[in-house]
Structures are given as C-alpha cells and as structure tokens.
Image 1 (cartoon, rainbow over the protein chains, first blue to last red):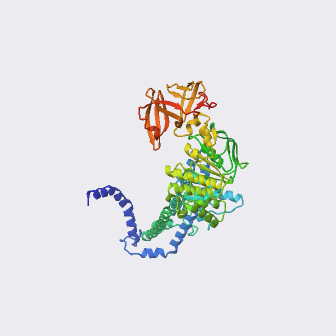
Image 2: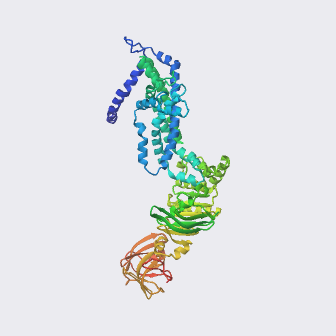
Image 3: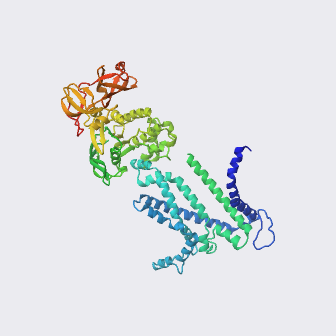
Length: 287
Length: 353
C-alpha cells in the first residue's frame, strides 16, 4: 500500500466504522435472524433453518395482502399529494404579499409527530364521537371513515394532509428555478397558458418532480404510526400495511425470524424500484 | 405584414418611469432599430409590444388594432430573445415547430414545415439534436427559425446577436437582414450597439432615459444629430465635442484648443462637434497641439491629439500617416461644412454653420 492509499483509507476509516456499527451490524444481524427459527418465546438457541422463513412468508397470503395494501396506500397518497402540491405551488408562485408567512404556516403539519396526527384523526373521524362524521350526518351523509372499503383511503388522506406541504415546498423551489425565458417565448409563440404549462413548464420541472415523488413514496412506504394509532390493521386486514405486518409478526407474535424475512423482501423490492428509477432518470438526463 | 404604432406609450413601476410617453411609427415591412444605452427603455418598449409587459399608458397598435389588452399569443408577433430562449427539452425540429403546434396545427404538417425552415437556415442535419448540443450561432438560427415559421405580422428582436462572437455577429446580422427583406415582415430590433443599428436599420430610433432622442434614417441621424447625446452615441470613433467660442472662422475652446472652422458663424458660446473623420491634422512646427497616441487599423489610423486640456481624435489615411508620429505638433481644422454646432445649455443642435 502506498502512503497515499493508506492516507485515503485512514480518512475514510471513521465513517466506515460508524456505518459498520450503525447500519452494517443491524442489517447483518437481521439477515442472520431471517435464516433462523428465532422466537422470543423459546428459550433454546435458535436453529439455522436456511431459506425456510422466506418460503413461508412468500407463500403467506397475509404478506401479499399487506404488500398490496401498502402499494395502494402509497399510490393514492403520493398521487394526490403531487397533484395537490403542484396546484398549490403554482398558486403560491403567483402570490404577491405575505409569501414568507404563508410558506411558514404551510409547514405546520410537517412538524407534528405522525402518531399525534394518527390519534387526532382517529377522534376527528370516529364514527360515533368524531366532529366530521357528525357534520356530514347533519347534511344527510352517512360515511364511516374507518369502515370497510374506506379505511385505507382515509389513512392515505391523513398522509396527504401531513405531507402535501412538503410537496408544495419542493415543487415551489422547482418552479422558481425553471428559466423564465422559454416560458415567455412560449407565450409569444402563441401557446395558451395550459399548453405552455404542459409542454414547457412540466418537462422542465420533471427532474424535481421525480425526486419529490421518490422521496415521498419511500417515506409513505414506511407507514406505521397512522395504522397503529387508528385502525390497527382493521377492518379485518384491510389496512394491514407491510410495516404493521412486520411489527405484528415480530413484536406481537414474537416470530423474529419470519419478521426479518419480510423486512428483507421489502428491502429487495424497494432497492430494485429505486435502481430502476435512477437508471431512467439518468437516461432522460443524458438525452 | 403590418404597420406598428406607439402612441404616447408609457411604462412605470410605482413612480419610476421607464418609458415616457413615446411616439414611434414602424412602417409596414420596414426594419426599425431601437438603440440606446442600457436602461433607456428600448427593451421594455419591445416587451410591451410583445405583450410580456403591461402598458401603463398610451396605445400600441398593430395594423390599426389596439393590442394593449391582448395576450401575447393573440398579437401575432414572433420574438427572438437575447439568450435564444429555446425549449431545452425539445429537439431542434420540435423547437422550430413549436409555434405551429401551439396553435393546433397537425403534428405531421408542423414537422414538415419545420424541416423546410431548418433546411433553409442550414440546420437540416441537426434537427434531432437538443439545444445544449448546438453552438451559440446554431442556437440563434433555431431561434430565428422558430420566429419565421409562423409568418407573423411583426418580428421582434431583443439584442439577438449580443451573445455571439464578433465574426459570427457580422455574418448573422447580414443573414437576418436578408431574411427580413425576403419575407418583407415589419421588424423591430433592439440593440445597444450603434454600429449594428447603423448597418441594419431602415429606420433608427435613438432612445435615452425613456424618451426618443431622435428617429429617422440612419444616414440622416449620422449627418444631422439633433443633440450632443445622439451625436456622441452614433458613429465610431466617437464625435469630438468641445465647448468654446467662434470668431472669424476660428474656434477657441475653454480648454485652450484652437481649431480652424472656416465658414462657421461667429458665436459667443457654443458646443462644437467634429467627427474624427472631419478633423484634419496638418503638421506645423509652430502648432501647440501634439499627437499623443496612434492606433493603427490597417488602411486607416485613429490619431489621438492633446490640445490644451482637450483630448481629440482624428481618423487619418495610411498615406497621411507618414508625416505623423507621437509628439508631432499639428494644426487642427474642421473639414468644410462638417462642423456640428450645439447650444451649450440645452445641448440641442443649432441651425447649420
């Protein structure tokens, strides 16, 4: 090893050590657990059972149900946030006065811990006690927010409520960095506002939009608190998301081996999605 | 094709007046250049005509139709921007086709037309490239292509050549003029470069501080500038301007210069303007003015002369240069009928000679 290489490794050593301890070890240990029949309730040393846990969870309809619930949740929540966020960002961009105040106020929902948001909505939307259902009933509408067929959508709406401001901020920053001149050129070239938005602003906003959607999707994938605070996976297993399913398997039913296997399946799927997405991003940037 | 008219057009932000009750006519089919130093309101005037800035007062008409309240898209104008303003995500062909697509022409027709335009501008081989893969000159052609494809009533050019290098600027200038003549479309062209204005324009409008300082044919303005500002702004090298008195065809400046100006009426106090081409230097041992610096420009040279407290410039042919070198004492004279006289207070042009 030359002195230069040794110096480089020396400079890298601290961060490698921290990553190793804080990420590598838990990850490695979890992977080891996923290969064992470790249960918190059995006393003896766990046996290594190889891929048995993976076969088990991959053929477990409850896990696939949890996956599809999570996917539905993420798609509804992120799609609504993006559309709403874009609309609000476009409106705020035109705002003339009190810009900073509005933007600061918009951030408020993001500062609330998700478990508190979950609890608040649980009471606000409760079929018997909630203010919103009571108001709807006085209008003659009977809607059970946490009832069958509705609960997952309600959870997604909670995410929309809390995280649309984040979308707004990102997209507003993106909109403000879109160069003005092509837009002026489009106006003079005879484009209507809608055409200019669709053909000029939106394409120029795409990189920011992609990153925003990616960030929000990854974050929404982790949904746990809303489920824990409101439905606990019900009615039935309608709102059992992948994180909640993992939590139940591991922490409530003490089957840590299987829970670790579910976590790794999720990790594999998410990593694949991210890699594919970044490839596409790079290709469109290179074009 | 259309005639454009500014009628007492005004632009102000709060109490700051950018364009101050300007009247300009742009005859049908002409190329009119708005020229002036930065901040004179020329670009703002153009942007008001394009519909990119609101008009604070007065009227702009295109072919007799008041366009004040119209959206840019309803004015039937096309504009070439200083930074080209191409659509970075679209190919050359799509960029050129954009105005047709935006006005709902079928895609295949628009692209076919764009291909013709691209070919005519020598961009035929580049149509699938993105703007960032083009040179500045090529980008400029794409911007021009995008402007001409729709055959608008009026062309607007906002300093379109200022980002090009000197050689390309002269070439593109010539090409632009040819395109404009061929299509016969009324064009309004903004620049801060008086040389560009002089060479390109049918009509030239010199602006200063939001007002029209002078307008007319470029040769007229060059020959009879109506103020000291226009006189020194138009022409290169700059006109010599000195304050002094004239008696018996002899001009004496307050700085101590003496210039023969035969045939010029006696006046107590006056500003004398002499174009460098009209300032004649004759080497004379007894003269007090001295050659300070000689800048060679090939066949001609710019000669800087120190005379009293004044620094004057003269353009001399290579032939006349043999007798001059730094330090040579020279007598100064204005070529006959070439003196410009201005009022020392208003700086307005005085009646000739």
